[in-house]
Image (cartoon, rainbow, N blue to C red; front, side, top):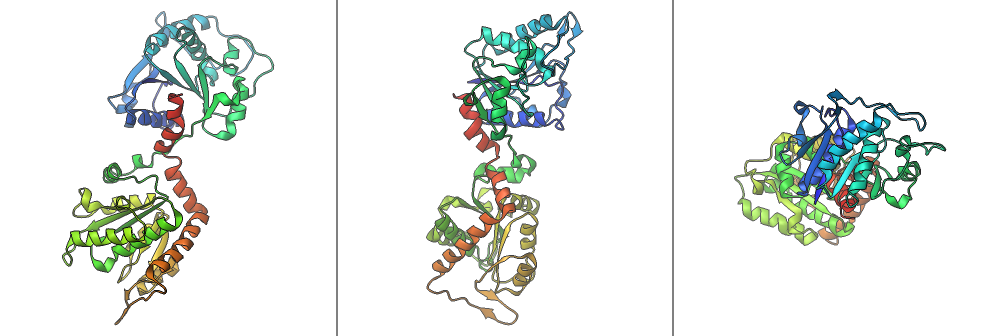
Amino acid sequence: MKVALLTMFNGLESTYSLVNVVAEQLRMLLEAEIETKLIVSEHCPDRERHGIFLDERIKWIKAVNQIDGQIIHWRDYSKPTGKVHDSFFKEAEVIAEDLLKHLSDVDVCIMHDIHYQGWHLIHNVAIRKVQKQLPNLKFIAFTHSAPVSHPKKTEWPLSARYSQMPNTIYAYPTQSGIPALAKQYKVPEGMCRVVNNSLDLLSFLSEDVKALAEETDLLTPDFLVVYPGRLTQSKKFEKVAALCGAIKKVSGQNVKVIFCDFPSQDIETENYKLHIQLQGIKQGLEAGDMVFTSDIGFSNGFPRKSVLELFSLSNLFICPSFSESFGLTVIEAASRGNFLIVNEAVPALEELGKNLNAYFMRWDARNFGFDTKETYHPSESAYLEEHANLIIRSIIENPVLNAKTLARQRYSPQWVWKNQLEPLLLR
């Protein structure tokens, strides 16, 4: 499959929101290994290319924007009535001939605001000429602003902003705009589709987090837990795994635990990792639900800055530590909007938990001058599942955590591609 993105951009400044939308769609197409052309105005400067626009897989097409040695000046034809300038049809024909040459080997052409914007009327008319000569070419026409009312009276070529083009699906970023979109172009709502704008959170994060994302899925888990610490028994990694297993068992949802571990001299590392995994599996996790960053190239620990970035993706932090003098990771997790669970039996964690309105559970602990040991009735598994139910409900009912999780999952480029854009290309 070969796809063209028809934008007619004169520049690539990221402050123009449509540039960011096209950048996300470019990334989706390239990650799917689809041959992609990007059609911009011939006056779009190369020096403004940045980010995904620098990818060498993109075939850049600079569409003609001059006639008889003179620049074609776009004019705003937003009103449904009036007259076009004298050279309009001659200019549209020149543009159409150029676009025909560039689209003749393409399967799908994705247009951005070409049918909508008044100052793209000349390109709107030109692409309709192309469509007549390429009847098998599929088009997706995106509208990125509020649809306008279908006028009672309009004539060609101004009517192009309000009329259907054959073999075209009309797309809008939200479901709420579909009825208005259909009315503007006078098409059935069944010929309109929703394709949300996406937020690529990973693109804003460090190379370390991106490397981790290559190894494991950080975006789709319903419960994403990050637990940094020295790989020692006093940090109780296995308790994190066990509670996460109970959460998965009770909720039936996707749970991922990222252990940002670094080595300790007081235990044989591989044996302890195996113990942690077995405890998680015993309660309901699968082996692939647990990741140790030391196993994927970060043998001396995951960088602290990158841990903070991971906390910006996660929604649940569990600290069952046996002993803490303060518990800075609790503060770090809280600062990035995580639901906090701490060991109430540790004085420092109890104090922090009260200040931060954390959820309390009890595990074995070291107090001032004595240790405490927990006994669970009827069993530790029952204790974990009881609290798992309460934790799940608390997270789901928290509007901020719910929004954070949905932003990561539902509006990721991966979700939008798989559920909305790719199906349109394959229709």
